[in-house]
Image 1 (cartoon, rainbow, N blue to C red):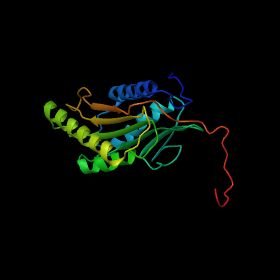
Image 2: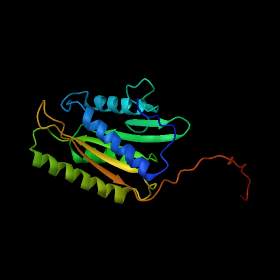
Image 3: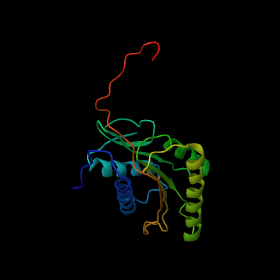
Length: 199
């Protein structure tokens, strides 16, 4: 059984450790469904299992907990906050990937995951080049479209690619961690102040 997550990670090292664990889990379990209609559903099912096994709640289209909430997939810790937001884009056009990716930038979740796909008919060299282009262009979005992030947050770009119909998983994953430590604080002791003119 996986260790239960009851608090948001409090250090950048803990956030990165969870991100690496997630990527390893995806690489070891993602099925070869990239040409099927249920490609996105399969991705969400894996995320649902990964975070559900750790005691988190999830929202996504088709889940028992409820429909998607702002992002394609969300995992949160009840009474603590959002742990992960994810987008999954089946279309391989960069503009569609970037459109979904930009939605991730405006979350305060410490983990943000973009899942996209590379066409199966690419050679290993072509697939690698395409994955590099995707992550380089998305890095420009990170630097230009949203200027404020919390220290320690990890953005994952996960490009699904299969070399052969029944071959080994050859996905490409890239992690970007924002420098610094998380700045989240509990609201203990704070309360709403009555509004008065002159405040």
